[in-house]
Length: 128
Image (spheres, rainbow, N blue to C red):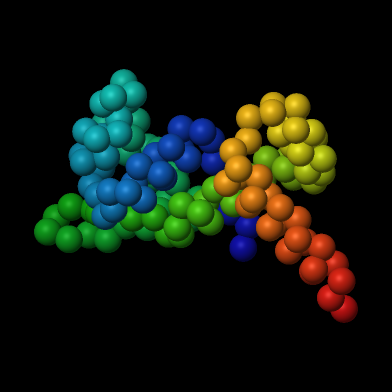
């Protein structure tokens, strides 16, 4: 199922919530919103939009809704990257790879991860 796209602020809120779930709107407003200058109503609106898009779920307990992520942060990030590649790069990862090579700032760990991904892609192409 394709989920609706999310913005940078929504992605940051999802990461915060993934580390503090389940949490009420008030808790998220205090821990996430205050440091960013966001009013409680703004945090509530963001959380409800994310719930509507299928990224959050909520349960009522003791008169308060508690929100949690519908998927892990890794899945959310993969979805966001996939949408970026499809919408912004027209499905081509070449501009992203070119940017990475020009940037020149890549750790040994990141390079090893990339090499493993390329090896995985190559093995998948060889399979019938």
